[in-house]
Image (cartoon, rainbow, N blue to C red; front, side):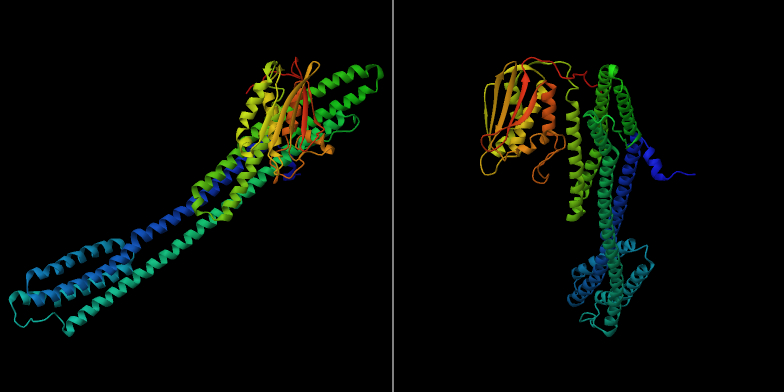
Length: 522
């Protein structure tokens, strides 16, 4: 019996899901690009047809009749003045008429009805030349005394009326063809807008599908597994871990679950409980390290598809921005903003996962220079907020300078972000010695934090405010705690005498990395 498609999808590995999702996204982008290009080419062809063929043909048809009128005027002047120099305009417009007839024939050569109209006009003009113009010129040149006025006989008028009628027919038919071409071009414009609108909708749908796929296939299973692992680590050793997601994550969950079961079984033996608990704790630490490494690798590999979504959306807006309406640009902005926010979240996760992995040992660090580097990074925000920074003497201690810069940068950055708009920001940074430790204090006069949230704010992805009001990913303070704990210290939200928030943390003057590992290899 054939298994349902949903079951087959659940069996796909994460690598296979990412690969097929990337192929589908690229195929969708290719289809959208081809649709827009085809519609633009059709629009260009129809526009070129109007500009290069039908509008010049219509103008030339009008000029042809004007040439005949100018020839008649020149003929009148010649018959009245009887001077060969007066015949120059007539000859000039005869030559111009012949040239324009050739040009017009070339422009309308693919339309037999228009060629027939041109032949009718040419024959009537030729008849006028043969029966009216040339005989009058010949009579003037012979000195015929009866030629005293311009040709105004009934025959001359009738011959010129035929020219006028033939010209009107030719011009009218050309106007009709040109108008149909204009309507076709309008239809091509409409098709371009439809193609661009459809592309925008497809991009939004694809962006949502990618985001939802990441949520369902990676973030939610990892978060669920981490939550259950923490719950088990907290003492619920008999509770079974239920894994989900791609085979890699589900297999990792089963490994953790088997480890939990082994620990629970070994605890039944009192004599071996302590030894086995230590062994299983070490295995759990290694498993958690593997899980963290997996989160790092997954986040790293998922950055590229998001970057492509944002780059192609921006490329679409730059290249076709003048053809997009405000709604299409708004949709593109939504897609780009969502991709960039997800990229920021992934980068923050990468920073979080790197703490404790890129340093094998500590070295003496001047924390005064560390604070200076952190404030230099935030200089634009400090100047924009009009903030006053007050700092005291800073010690030299063992640590990782890069991580300590990130620690102070996050704490001062939070003070700038959550400032009170009613007063200028003021931030104090001090350090005091406490035995073999140094206690650092960062105090501000911002909006402050209620004591009930003192522990929650250090949990990853926890936010106390809406993203629309205060940006960020909810990782900053969790990263601060991880950096401090990596330095064998402690960080907490201290009591504040006045408005604002006070963060304090301790770092030993001499120490070694907490859980240091060899540097990552790429």
